[in-house]
Length: 175
Image 1 (spheres, rainbow, N blue to C red):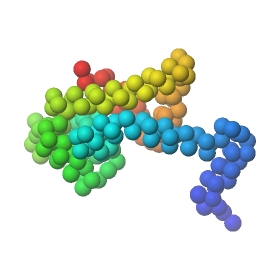
Image 2 (cartoon, one colour; image 1 turned 30 degrees about the horizontal axis):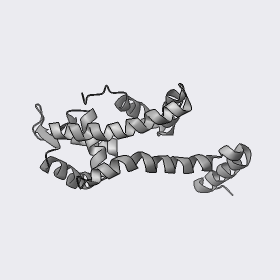
Image 3 (cartoon, one colour; image 1 turned 60 degrees about the horizontal axis):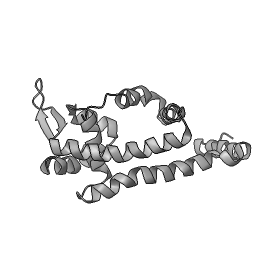
């Protein structure tokens, strides 16, 4: 009898726990949950003052880093539906953090840009997260940023990794 995929994964996890000792995969999963909690917690507290949440943060981040990003490309990056994006984007535009302009070739296509106030908020949010990253890499040593980058890249679905790395490697356009 063949095992279904979740059963196979449980066997792999059980095996890794018995062979990896203190550094089990389960421990890494839990550490990732805690790290993510704190990584997003810093911006969450700032966003609360604006009445925004994590969805607003993600939209603002990617638009700030990719001026002129189309709504279609943003949906692809975030892997969300248009129905999920619309209220968040409408609020960011309505409050003056993002500007939507029609495409020069196709007027139906919308290109997104951060306004000056959107740029400032994006910089503040990014500063919180880069400080946390800088502290962590400083505590772990000079090669840790490269190892962390390799690890995080390896966590991305292989079929999507090249595109994610291309987006992540974009020059800082917030200056």
